[in-house]
Length: 357
Image (cartoon, rainbow, N blue to C red; front, side, top):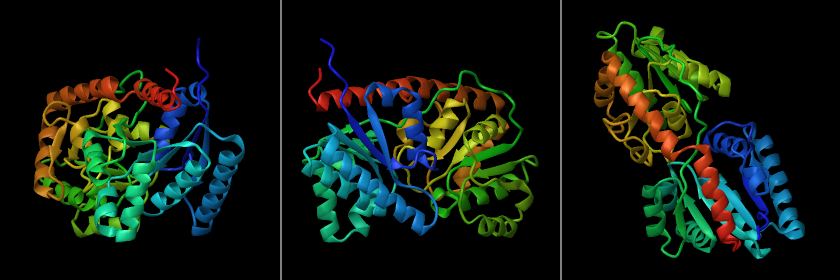
């Protein structure tokens, strides 16, 4: 007999917002998971002023409490990262467990290791470990992150579910020569300073080189940083872009670059791979599990401007290399990171947790 799908309460940032969690939630919704598993989504955070964030947290917390007390979802599934995100979600998951719900802690963000082991007090480390070990399941984006979580919280039940992105039906070949695209928050932790240094090193050899940075941040400060390096004419700070504008920028890019200092499994990287773009990225977090250097992209050490410039030069100088790596990158996404595969994996996890076989 066919079993009824469990009721799921999913918690996370506003789905119309910015960042990796919002992009993942949009992909899961588009992939049919919400209908398949009867998911209700509650926003506990949104971009904006401190007051807007507080209002979203209070409203989301109240909606979660109401749902747990009166509707009793089978599972509360929280997308969480570090600092305030962890504080909100860990409290809501505790309330859900008190109400008799099963809970999933779904970890995002590359800074969690530092948050859990260095930045937190001894009391907070105990609470982090308690939250992980009392959750019915902890989801990590990569095997590397799963290994850390198992070592930090030995009694936690940890599994790996990667991020998912939709695979475009076709690849638009309209790239501009020498155009490098960066998608993400424009900040030092994303390796923007090293990327500027690399562009300055590339300029004498590649007169057409141009860098486009699409994302929020202190753009005025980064304009000054570009001017200090003499590359202001080679840099476009586009600000945050919606999905259609990101797709247009990806189509125009010769190379995608993400030289972050720390990462989980960045959605922007997967989007670029799905679009068939040759990628250059730093070998941090879960990136080396998605990008095998020389096979479907190029990896460089974080904080190394010279190595970054050398990898980008290899890409810009060899159209055949860009095409081969881009095709392999797209095939990697189709095989491991498609919305169909990840939605199916999450649906199976939900059924397993409530005993539906």
